[in-house]
Length: 431
Image (cartoon, rainbow, N blue to C red):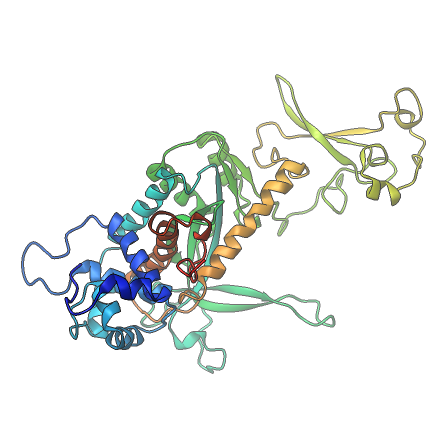
């Protein structure tokens, strides 16, 4: 980068945490940028890296519209120079929009993956736990306005200016106690799907129309994860009930040689008669039994459950009778081991998940990291985009994920503050 000779650049940057933040962020970008700034033939125009840095600044500074970005850069000449533009010579909003709509998404994804691989190489990010989730993206259309009397609610039709947007539910609306029927809010748009590490750093992402299920997209993302970062046995995949699909379980366990920690999705399924309200087997007295481990033989694999009066915790025993209500012989005679029950899980990866064990419960708690990740991504113009073209929206979302990946890179490698890799607002503030 070339700067004016009439001021001390580094003195100004080091005196202002705002400029120090974006100086570190752009230095991190330069570490992963490996393409020419100008085309081989034709007019040179503005540097490609300058466009990308300006759009990364837009995401990090939570600027919603490109026109606001141009005004912001015009009012901050030093920041415009940091991006790579000459003073007083900044592209207008139409040129930024054209750049977003004409740049192939694979190019921006390449920078995103370069950032992730560098974080893994430096030991900042680990790959032993992978967490998956998705976030809705509302299309820029009048049909998302609930006050619009001509709002289209036909999912079989495409809407104008957003032909790739699909119609699906946005969230569940809690109703008063008098209303028993569930109600959902609906929207036209897309979803951004992401796999993050346990440190809360994005690894791979994909933005697709809203009508594709999480479980099918997760399979695509996991294949891409292995292709970019390599295979690793024993890796743990964590997702919510939206990923509860036998096809995904089989892929994770049999092909990736990993473990899937996913809760059961009971929608549309009839509960088994032998199970109690919490999904555990019941003894003859009608008490839900406690999980006792997994038994593996040469021929089969089974889950074992034991008497809750004997194996329960102190709090659980306080709510249970002290003696077996049926006076079962296994409780009253001999070693008083109590009743046992088994569930056969042979050749069923979905049933073999030890959802009753402490290990499952402790590991599943880390899934909340993806919720915190989306809360950081949310202010960066995620739930409501201003672009119309599908490529522009995909590029915008990839840049949003890239900005958080670069935050980790800048905090850990440029500023030497690895404890600030998730602090996208304050990672450059004085300690």
